[in-house]
Length: 311
Image 1: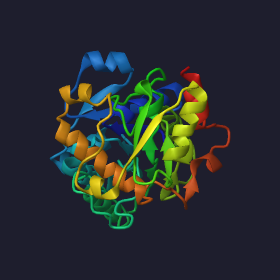
Image 2: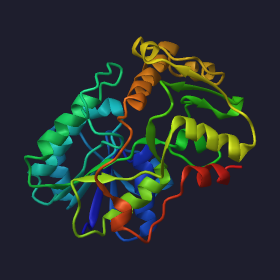
Image 3: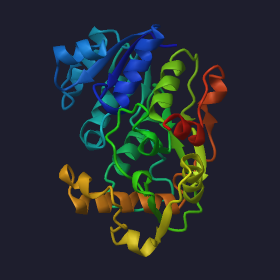
């Protein structure tokens, strides 16, 4: 069991959802690890922020020991993973008080079938951290969550993620699905993931791999559920693997507003990369320990239920 927890990247995104879920449980003391402190942020979230220099392993180790942090949960951003995740893992191994570690995986296994997708540079660093953890005495668990269903149900449902339109443009009743659309894709809701992560802190033993997903349907089936719940027909087209491998996707009506914060080329290549992973079955999570088995009192809502809540 855990008692004092630190969440790296806990100020925003999935990390913040995890911090809030731990606070809601009211069983553990939780810190946020961040490169910058913010009194305003601390008051808003309700957890103390510890300033950390991720480039200095000894600094991280000293911080963990000083605050007697026995459990580290990493929810570092994709960009930060390549820069800091390994140092955080090494410092946790060196710490005299830290015994548990959750790496910032939150997706699929890397490299699952050696699928090479250049716009997704965080795959190799994640794989490297997993290789390192296998050599340590840390009790660790990599959480495989599939894709986040938040992109289809939020808003209106609460989500800590930035809103992106990914393959299904519900607002404009259009979809451009990767490949055939017939390959199962596991999806999880961040708020449920956070709830189960908080719950897992009470478990006496962690499995090295933890699976969690609210639903697993093909993209064609996801579209069908949207049509049934909303009572509207979705106009569907399909992007071939050849198109996806060229770094391109069909532009959907909700994409142009996204270009204000991220360039069109980056969004196209990024979503094309995910499209390849969808169509090649990387998101079809199959074998492994499902956290629901260890925490039967907690429940997951399927895609239809989540979508219905937003109506």
